[in-house]
Length: 347
Image (cartoon, rainbow, N blue to C red; front, side, top):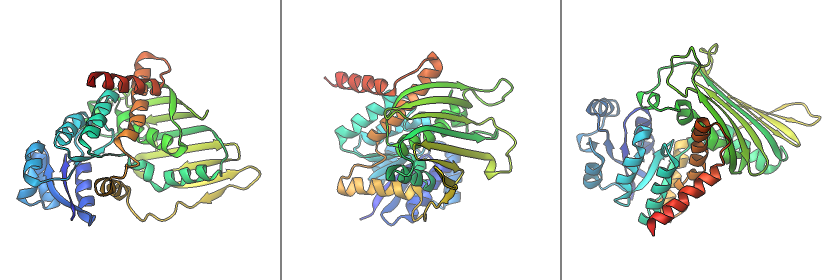
């Protein structure tokens, strides 16, 4: 029997999820939800949604459409409320990044999901892109040796942000940084134990606060990383839709360069050689839907689970606090504090 899904939030990302669900035989689209009637009407026309699948409120959709899971694609500042509504009914979740805006909210949702025995998958789909999966494989195979230094840079030309993102104080952190920070800890297989971050907008810039950021990261395996992201770049408007990405993984035996989707491995005393990423058999979204399916049917712990994503949320929280307090922050200490506070509230 197919898994019946409600998609909450019908912006561009929510519409993507509707298409993914429809194309996956393991799932059945049961409901589409958006409190903005104009957005709901536009999505209904674009996606040819029947009347019985359109809902303005999630509780109504859950009660009437008999949903097994909810995909949360609402604005980030609404994630917590929507997730709580679904979890209160024991409904499984797929949540778009960022999981929540604050670490404490994420911890509370994970604890509620454990109580309700409802799986959570966080849609950190960048970690499943072919480039990052190839980096992870090469590191695990030892092709680089111990990785000592990572440099990761993302630049995008100024653009009109969705209102849901522009109203957040740290727009590039929540919009793109959370993707790359999650991917770095995933490919390295190490926890982050120190963060020093600056979040800013250029003086002459017209974008909201926090349109650029720089962060230093210390990993538990003695790896160090430099991460830069900006929505205020220029001069590459006609290259890759105005976006540039570069990462360099420097190991004891070799250095791996990632430029957009091209990878080059530079071993000691050897000519640089391109590295194939392999075939893309499934979209990143289908990989995540597969995790949700196995969690629901077989009780398998998702790789991109809510619990796993607490590590990413701790790094994001550390970035926010470091930018505010102008000091190094240990994400593990933040996470321990929130977990202990959660336990004390239960007793």
